[in-house]
Length: 313
Image (cartoon, rainbow, N blue to C red; front, side, top):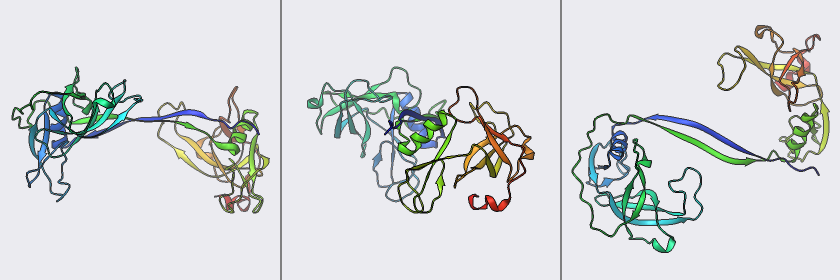
């Protein structure tokens, strides 16, 4: 059995959001070295602040400063920090109830080891050297043996408040296409398209899935299909995608390769976009060194009869 493919993949995008008055004050306060919470109608102080009371759902906006010192309420040791975490050396994730607050704030604690951390440990904020108005303005917490710090009484009004944030969302993972799609990808490297036939309904799936989704049976019989096929349906793309060097408008279509029981998708080229139609017969166009067709172009054959592909729409 050939080796199953696998490869590291990263999904990453910037997430931009605006801030309401409460979150704006909280993050601006961190930039200025002030920790702000919000007081509910019952007199509880919530840190980090929220815009609606989690108990009554009433809107709350009464900002109140709390101290940068507090007490660990619970913790977990992180022996292997990952990329983007607050510290590069082993540290503790802690929930800290700051002095003057009634709820706890999650952050990192810089400690020499798990033996130095315990519930009830007194800690204080270690501020980042360069602060921009983000939760990372608190670099971490550190153990503290002094008296509780006293708030200055800041009311939460700032010049040049932070009104929005951009957070990088990222997911690192290893993807494996599995046995069936590994065979499909390896065949494409030889400019062949291979599917798998269901032993019951006899439908040929391209790309193969390793099992028939209709019958629930494993598929193993390989069937070479194409290379020519029929456009079953299509769309005209008018918005240029970032990092994709294709001029708009262009056509993306579902193509039923000859011998396949399922249509796959591909770009249509070699013809004006407004001449692409259902039933158009096409063939793949390969570029040097490519592992899959760059696009499909018309073959010059008569259009396929609708009845020959209507089941694959």
